[in-house]
Length: 499
Image: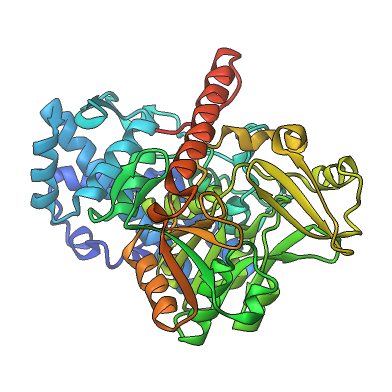
């Protein structure tokens, strides 16, 4: 490695003393060798100066991220050696190994699935549960790395979430109107974008595990794990007039700012072009009100992650693909500082999004224009546009879906299953929002807003159409996704890998 002389100070907290004193046992030295040779680590070390020049990472942030990646690779290759020497390992042996090495079981299982994706091992499952792992590679150096540019992912499956642009250490990726471009003159092929992308490969079992924390029960497989299913409406007058449905997302942000829970929130607001949204960093509860309302045109919120890093307590609002990308970043520990900074992941329900041109065409199809539109909404299987003069035009979703992003039809997730708390209109009456509280963080946020007198709440099971409709529509999206993936496989087209 050209800049290997810089590496000791980067990994000084990762058993570096043992390395320097040559007290590592051979298996650890072998694992350290493979970890150092990992191109994901090597790229960051070799391109360190170029990365720092972009200003996206401070020296401390970059060194910590490199340390994290090195530690992950070290633990992974130690685990691989253990599997190789044992021939295979069953579930109870994996639990024992985690305890023996002082690691969380989740982290060891993550390493197992990572090795599966990389071709280092195979995993057997019994009744959908992890059963056994077997080493399949004689030498990790013989395996071609799976991590590459997101350009290697077909543009026909890109979600447009913006995570690749947000995580790129060189800032060489841009996402515009659901399409990405890469400046090849800057790209170092570190693979961070591919690792973070929700459509390259998504370890769904690990995502579900991380969300549930062993506390939330997957009451219904179609809508993910949750602690509570509720219907809510804001009590804040200023939000009632501008919010979508019950105004719950805006109210949660309003409360979080008011209570000092966050000092910034990443979401979207309408840009200078009518009905074309853009990423928006909110700093106050007034900003949250300014950003109120659903935007149906695709918007790469997560591309603004570098700009939000300067804040210490952040909420992120986004669609299911954005929540998947953030949670995947948590699983693979891509940026420890950012993980700690993001306090709340607020997901919104999403059946599909539209390119900006699609929104323009829908307005024309409904006999109006985006210049006349005051509000857009999808409810009860219809697309509504409320005009500035108060008139409302509508059409069944099936009549406008041809204008949607075809890439969205690969997504299985209606209810933002990866979020801390998920919000949408399906299942609740007009003027109310359905809310799935999924994690302790989501519950703490929602309960705080409720205790502050900002929300009126009912049990989703006690209202009509309620939970059955939400589960039904979520099932429809999931089934359509499965059909789309199978269709792509039959045609030998690239498809998302949901594992």
